[in-house]
Image (cartoon, rainbow, N blue to C red; front, side, top):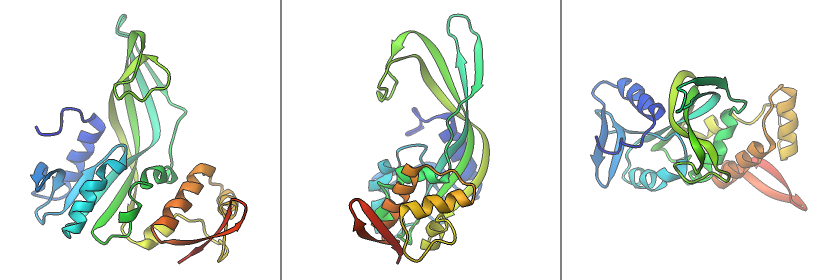
Length: 238
């Protein structure tokens, strides 16, 4: 099939899942100059993107300009298990990764899509998932397949599998995005105010995720940003 040779099991499973939600939907459909992951009977487009949302920028720009609805599905790995297969002995080691993400991890990805977030033809679904990453050992330290490793390792990631789907966050309006701000913020607030408000709600949100959220919200027009000192800013909801 077109465009499926390099997709992970995670991508393939989510594509099948979302295609099944609308009777008559088709997958891997060439439409105009692009291939859509899913198109339903009404011509609405759904794209599954497991990483690097900015890669969809041109496709989203094209279809929204054509006044066609496009929804992006992005999985957030809240829990990850790692299954490592030793290619010499055949032994498999299964462990839980200490890494995990929250809904606020998505803002690093949204820095490339902020011009479309409030477009009426665009919607986003952030899906919390539990995954299993499949690895195979190598005799010598190697670079990753995508070439992004800073340090060579004695293993290669060969697949990513979906274990469980959790909470789904849907975004299609300014209210949906602003609901991620903590409650009881003052009318004019800072990043520190947000961090303290999250702490009062017993939420451990990374400082960098808060800063990225403020960057995205101010750039897409949800927040007004005003300098109030050296490298300090106040924000206000527009």
